[in-house]
Length: 345
Image 1 (spheres, rainbow, N blue to C red):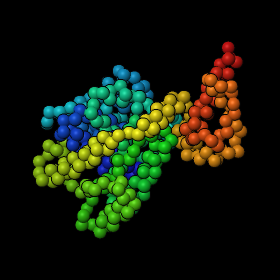
Image 2 (spheres, rainbow, N blue to C red):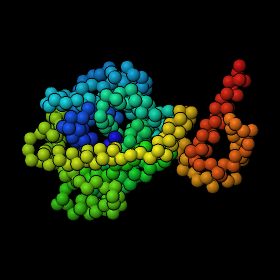
Image 3 (cartoon, one colour):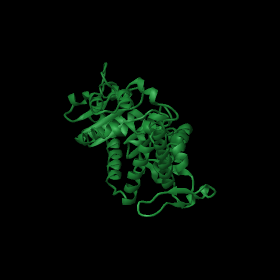
Image 4 (cartoon, rainbow, N blue to C red):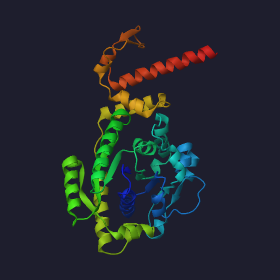
């Protein structure tokens, strides 16, 4: 699950660590992936110092040994017994935060996590506050995305952009991806402006807005500054906040438990296959093609498709779904590469 915001300063990492604390308190084997170049999640989990491998090395080379060396145990385990690890963040990961990533780029974290996913019950990914390569890499590796917003006009706009971007990526590349919802953070109930913006978020997102609101409390900053989970911090405010994060975690678990449609699973596998074929192509170009309606291909030249049991026959592109169009383009690309290899030989 990714925790994201397309606006900085809304407390995204705070929410990610709160969810990690809730999972830790329940005894879940939890991994936090620090994909934000600011590395605040790593700091909040007590991962200080120099490390041989970090998430930047994983994105460069997602091999089994690199992935394992980039993961260390959190110091939270010294406060309370449990299993929580962190994939160390690095400022060097900024080099992968390009505005125009390729399919191959955005698939690397998914490849890396496939090496270790059986070792954990839950993986939480803290993303940068942007819609560039790192955030989309996190979303491709995720089943759910929790969007964090504060009650301000700019955060409302950013949350709407995030929801649209998630839907675009879900339709174009990874059908299993869904938005868990929007959660309001840093809420001040006495503020009329906050109440107004919270109502605005309610009208905009309706059932996609989480029912809980996280109030602005110094307790959260104190716990994070001490590299402690909020569930172990003393005081009534800490208990109230812990209960809120428990509710958000429950909502996530309930969402994970929903049965997947067989058709969606089939589509997911098909898109994964296409992604491997088209891995060098620009992600935005692929998503743009996927968003086109079949009727927009009505004037295109027929594509020659070879079937294993029938002679070659022309196929009118207007009858192809967007995914079938991607397959056809991938097939043509493979044929072109094959011809080029023959010419070189």
